[in-house]
Image (cartoon, rainbow, N blue to C red):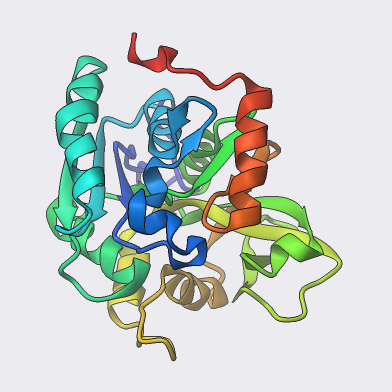
Amino acid sequence: MTSRLGDTLPVPLVRTAVIPAAGRGTRLGRLTQAVPKELLPLGTRPTLDIVLDELVDAGIERVVIVTRPDKAALNDYVTNVLQGELRARGVVLELCPQDAGPGNGGAILSAAARIGVEPFVVLWGDEVVFGVNRTASVLERHRETGRPTIAVVRVPRDALRRCGVARVGSDGSVCELVEKPADPPVDGLASVGGYVVTAEVLEALRATRPSTDGEVYLSAALADVARAGGVQTAEVLGDWHETGSPSGYADAFAAAVRSGIDIQHVQ
C-alpha cells in the first residue's frame, strides 16, 4: 500500500540501509584492538549479525557497511561469510570506504554518494534492540509522515548521558535534540541509532561544521532539521543496548543470552 504525506506525493519506499563501522571503539580499550566492536559476541553471535537480522526482517534489500581498509577482520568477515549468507536471503551486502570526511557524518555521506537520492535507514553497528524490530518502527513512522525519522527509547538518567536526548512535541516531532547532555532529565527519550535519512538531512549534513573533536556528526544535522519541525520520532518499546562501553557491552551480552540469541539466522 502506498503511503502519502497528506494527500500529495507518495512516500518513496526505503530499500537501503547504511551501517557506519569505521570507528575504532576506543571506549573498549585494548579489546577493540584485537576484535572490531561490530564483531564482539552477543550470546553466540557477532553483534553485526544481530543488526543485519533486524534490517533484513524489516524488508531492507541492500546494506552498505562503511569501513576502513585496516579493519581487516571485519572486512574479511563481511566478504567471506556475510555476503554469501545475505545473498541467499535476497539482500545485497557491500563494503564502502569512508572517504567523505571524519565522524559518523562522514561515513553516512560516503555511503550516500553511491546510494543516490533515495532515503535510507542508518543503524550503528554497536547498538541492538531485543524484543521488537526498531527498523520496522522507524520505517512505519516514515511512511506515515514522509519525514526524517529517529528511533527513541525511554531510558534512565545515567543512560541519557551516553546518548542523544530528544525533546518531543505532542505530534511526535522533535523539538530539540541534544547530544550526550551533561545534565540530562531524570528520565527521558534517548535517540538510539535508528534513523531514516532523507535528502533534507543529507543537505544539512553537508553543511555541518566539524565538532570540537574534529568529527562531523549526524546528530548535529538532525538537530538543524529538527529546529524547523522537520524530524519525526518512533518510540521503540524494546530492550535497547549499546555495546561500545564496558558496562554497556556486559549488559548487552547478558540480555542476548536471556533473549536466546543463537546462530539459526543462517538457515
